[in-house]
Image 1 (cartoon, rainbow, N blue to C red):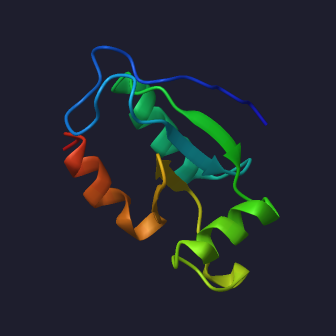
Image 2 (image 1 turned 120 degrees about the vertical axis):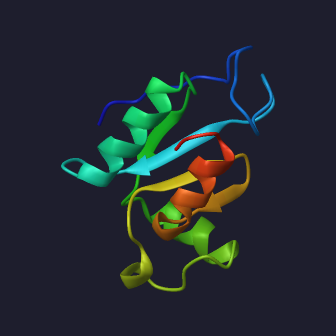
Image 3 (image 1 turned 180 degrees about the vertical axis):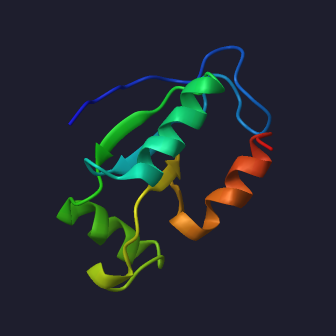
Length: 101
């Protein structure tokens, strides 16, 4: 899986402050929704780190955050901004916050 690791640029975007937040996209190969999210972030010049969305450690983190309780609840992509997770059904509100139409 491709791995891109970046920090936010000085330009940033609405709701994100340069150098403070780290954006992580949890995805899997062949996931069209994952590719769409990564494309939106790239087009907005929001750097991100890509991680394996099928990792057991991700499920453990999401359980601790109270986001999911079982692997059956997991729908990719998932975006993490610092310690806050945005599940698939929460991505529209995240993108609105970031200034996407």
